[in-house]
Length: 387
Image (cartoon, rainbow, N blue to C red; front, top):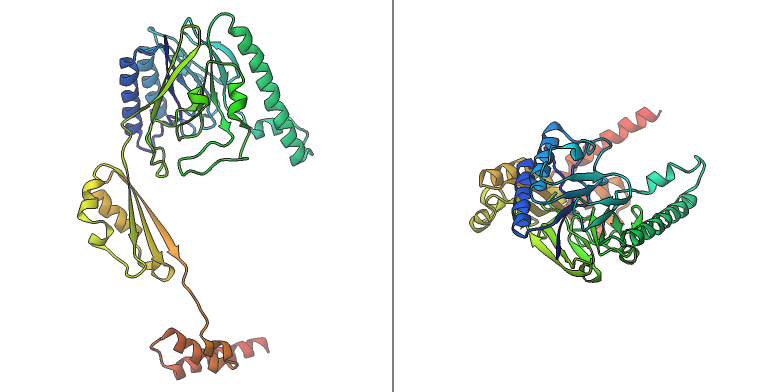
């Protein structure tokens, strides 16, 4: 049997709980070691943005530890910047090789029985850059479709040739048409899209995907996103983890199992302040405070537009952090103020009648004559300015 650990979308980010990211990757290696995996593949997005020294150090430490478990093969993701991955394959890894590539093609995996077909990230911008400056949107669309088709045809032929010597798997950072995000939204038309059938028809034993952070699969697990190993933002409530893929020695697919990792919990607190604006204990109940200890807290309140000025986001965040939350995101769902016109206001013709009708419809406690005097004063000033 051949056992493959499929991981992706690590997003090592110094600005976003780097210690959490390091810890969850250490947990992944513990699980991979316990499963006696033969190969670790990473399907791209090692970093969140242009890497920092701290992030590069964290990735290097992870890869050196990973190479003591099994050979490591990875591809470039859309978040990975030019040059940021170049040094990683040159790390001192005496136990097993580390290879990370940014060009499509067939590569040795470091495991003597498996070849890897790599498909690093490419998008419409890459294709459009090759077109004449005056090429239109339709020409770019058709050229992109043609380029993707030619790439798949080439890789299909390379996979067929490589299978003469053993099993082949695909590792790609790709957008699969019809895949779902963590919010349940189906992504369509953003970049170059390949269908699950396109990838399955390449003929590989398994297609390991990265890019979408929600784990999902097609063709009985033969084509799959592993999802991200941790919650990269507050919109990812689903379980996080990696995939353990088992093949027969001849490459016949056996199974694909999702293995959960101890990503930091997420707690969502919903509040309704449309009737009265709350503070202090109204931010969270005692039971909610207990449940959110050491968690990522997404605090969302429904509030009227006219009361939005009373929502102190900083106060809410400080209160929840002080009560034990690891990180807080405050969101306001604003209910638009209804401005129904009273019948008296609709019938009013003069400025004075309109003012009286408006004050009456709103129930305002003001002196009507004083307001009318101010209106008359403004109208005189406007008339003088016009003349």
